Image 1 (tube, rainbow over the protein chains, first blue to last red):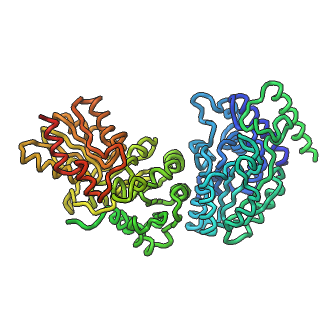
Image 2: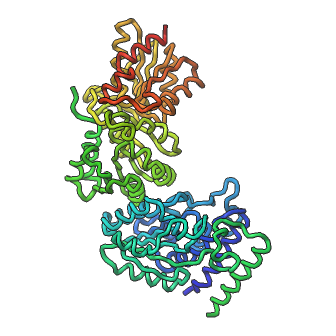
Image 3: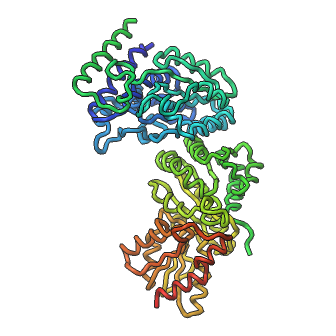
Length: 276
Length: 310
């Protein structure tokens, strides 16, 4: 079994290189969501380049589309496209690797970028899988600032109405959005109780802990008649103190000095994870 | 006088296919009655999805269903579908290229007296401006059936606007000329070309009859396919005429008139006069009263056409 904790730190380095080369990117949310993506793509979901057209595959929607750099790094590691090409072309003129997910690329199901679309789209997917009597599952990742969008709650109502126990939503609860703390901008605590009130099964876990995330995803499989929300409590910019918990790093390109420090920190954490 | 509204034909046509094609799914946002979809929901409950009064969700759920191989038909009042869920139409349907058919019911001023909140005089412009979105306004029940049959055979997103009320037949039962994405020539003439869409085709056809009595020969083109616009059809009709009249149940901006003027201006310059609703909340009344008030009837079209070629 691959060391997924180390992999998450290695892929963060790809993200930083992508953003520095492309001169732009939503680095803070990329870092907070990395363990969620690694857990889903390397442990939970049945999806790979070999079965990406199989109707019975698990499906994933990146509703917080601005964290596309993290998704690109994970998809490249899964073999959907070469990481060297992503780093060289990300956000550049004519590039297929644009700054939000688009499904002309292999491995990406739905285009996103505007927030509040992923959950209701995933409701449609999960509903179709129920109609088709397929056992595969649907996963969607939302940002916490995102859930101020009313369409999220329309989707939350519908998922509950149709008892979509094949649907898991992950909330990347890093508590920061572009203007500051989520609780100051538009507070959502206790978000767990809010979703429970909408008829959801809810787990709240350390979102930087791959084992804890996988544990929640596995438990969700045993729940019948309800959709599951996994609140992944994370740190925006997780991986280096240079960017951790700083709203200004929602969208920020590291300068040369910051780049050196961040890469050093990420390499150290990767090494430490390998020797745990 | 025909009593079957176009929306009912959409339901009936889908029901004909739904028994054998289990991927056909109809979605409504508490709109199954106004969409004439109640019979579908009763006969095919497993293929019917109610989203509640949540038009954004209606469209996003449709896109998710389509991504998993379903053939969703999302039916909701055009006024809400084309504005409340505009971004979902843009991103989840057009940009993600999902096979969602958006059925805008009670379009234009069908909800006459209910006010501007319930009118959709902007949907042609809004939907046409989205890349990869097609826009269709069938003229009568017979053409509506042909259109739905054609849409069932493709896998791309489209917006279809229908009115609430039954409209008189433009075509004859058993003899409906229809080619997908080609405007239908209702009649050919040499003095003036009248290009109309949706419920305005019948008054355009009647206007041609009135003009004939005055010795003016008119072409009438049924541009049910507003996007992709049948450019060749427009050029052919305009080249034979001294002036072009466009007629639509829509704002004067960005609709059929604007599109036809672009083509005619570039390819065969002629005078183009656009008959449309005003750039203002329309007067209160039934849709017929509203049409009559703004000259969107046979007499109004004929009068404009006759003056245009004087």
